Image (cartoon, rainbow over all chains, first blue to last red; front, side):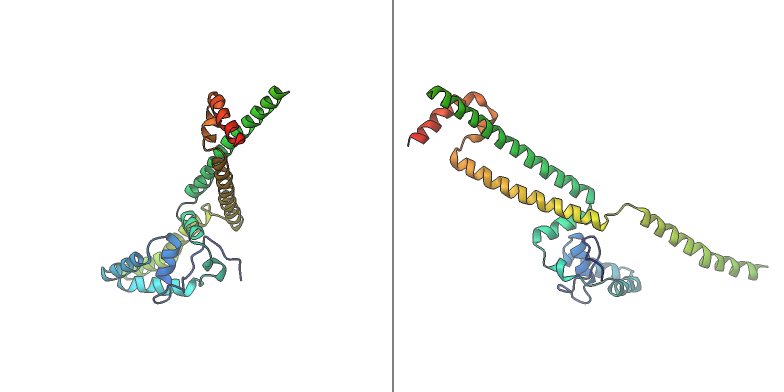
Length: 128
Length: 94
């Protein structure tokens, strides 16, 4: 048993209709599960007839069900990892911008605190 | 000649050309940069850290706003310190 990975395709047994492949795709990409299922049916009807079903069975046979650790994550975290899977570069940029935002706000706090300290020191000097 | 040549060509394409094509794309796909398990853990940690810092800073900012609603202007514009000092000292006197 390998360690569960956030960037691996898993079957989503909890939301399955058949084997959980469509629910797994939806969970992997962040696309709505209904859209994935309708897309699958439409492709099947529009000439993909045996191949989509073969692909479905192969996926259901090869992929593992989602590990328990990954099913118990918060909505925010699930969304974050869906973003990582779609575009890792953009997610890393997002994380960096969050750190920059924190840095900027912290600089504001620091300026205020240090300036109020110096003000306090000046007032004490005046009282002497 | 023809009845030998065509099956040989088909066999060649089927047993050499097709696997070649498939392995070519498989090796290409494998050589692409992907996130390793280590990268994933690092990213997970960074994301958690950013969220926690964000929350903590939010708490600090809320406390400071409750203390002195104008602290942001004070930090940006030190010229208003004189006026704000009056407000602050009155607040202390209360």
